[in-house]
Length: 296
Image (cartoon, rainbow, N blue to C red; front, side, top):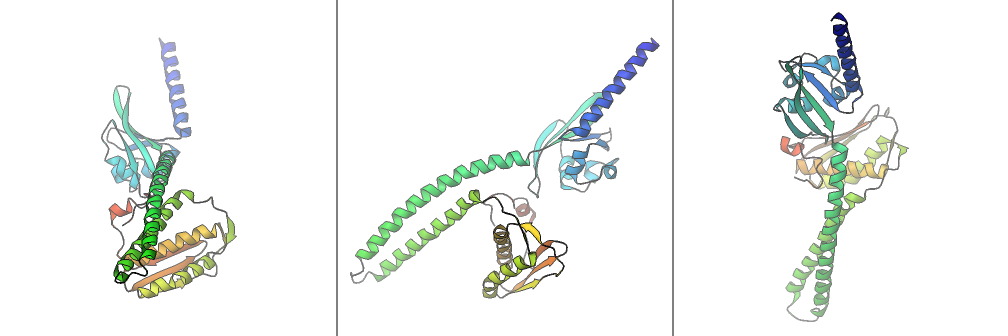
């Protein structure tokens, strides 16, 4: 009897050790709770997903951990599985379940990072939609502009048609604008791989500020530039970063409207920051910032 009991304890100990090893090396986040819903154990992946240190959350309930993912987990019902999309564009598949140990339920969370999988699927879907839309719009506008140009030329020598020709010219310009608009959408799926070179953040900020001065002046916006002499050069694709920074400044100007301030500054060791006194965005908009083609 004693020998059997000893063997059983050894088997359980070895089994628990094996499960502990699996938790530590698992690519999924694992969080184990006690009967009161307090965290008793979590693996390194779960700590990274929660953006906490492991010892900081032991003994806490999920609702008491002030991170977006933890707060989302705290709202789940037992035996529920749902996808959680955070503001930083990360997507997680979360399962709240339990296992039986010595006749008692032990709740736990399984968290799987789905960001890359979902992004690839969404990108393929957007590529197909964009190609279809671009093809149909460009074909349609090409036919319309060609017809309007021909009609406009035919009416040049006809008296009393100036108003009509002006309206047709407006229609032609709108067609060209629509073509440029859809082309910009199509460019989203053609962004090249970045070519990294050691470049100056100060020079990037200066070039973009100079480029956006005219737009800001038209809106009576004071555009300021503050560059730190101690900022390090960083590896970046200058062309792509210029596009990013110009878009951010443009968004700031649109947020302000008329009259206001935009500050572009570089901070050591290698940070570039754009601040404005615009009206900002609400939480619903913030949750959708990284959704392709979403705009306010």
